[in-house]
Length: 261
Image (cartoon, rainbow, N blue to C red; front, side, top):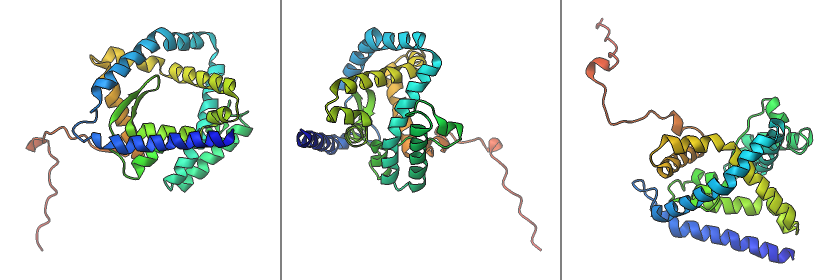
């Protein structure tokens, strides 16, 4: 049974890597969305599924569940994600962050009652988020075609491969499936989906109301955020280049030269 599971996991990794190699060359600086026709179709499917199934459940959950309960489950799933972060810290040679994030996981898993209480944040311990998609970007694979995944939403070819890698290697929920706890696995996945959708209730409404083309708005926001994560925030600190030069009177005056002695 375990050997079959390992073979299945290995095939998933190979499939993800092959997907990246086959399609990563499609994206260019000028066109980040060469699969736009297919992506828009999946986006519409996700929008319908969200509108009539996922969003109502998330809204009911937010209405019925007290804030401490919702926060506790959100902390729990975030704590599970710390394992993925630690591995990718190490793969990016960020050893200090790996030590900090491992400490967060240990503290929250013990004193935080399996992660339901974010004790580490109460102690002002930094919280990093890393995944294998960011690791691939860190080591040079920064250009990748935009891709919309069914139910999951915005991604790229690179990040989809990273998601497969992280899911197979460091996701504790996947482990429950591997040991035969299929029902528990499905329950955790459903709860994780509802938790994530509840976090995005307000953001999704803003995207729909603020843009004539919610698809393009979501795509551009996602790609900008991922580029910023890979650069560890450096992208958001770059000055914007709007193609205009300052008028002479708006430029800072040059320092006056000292008279020659």
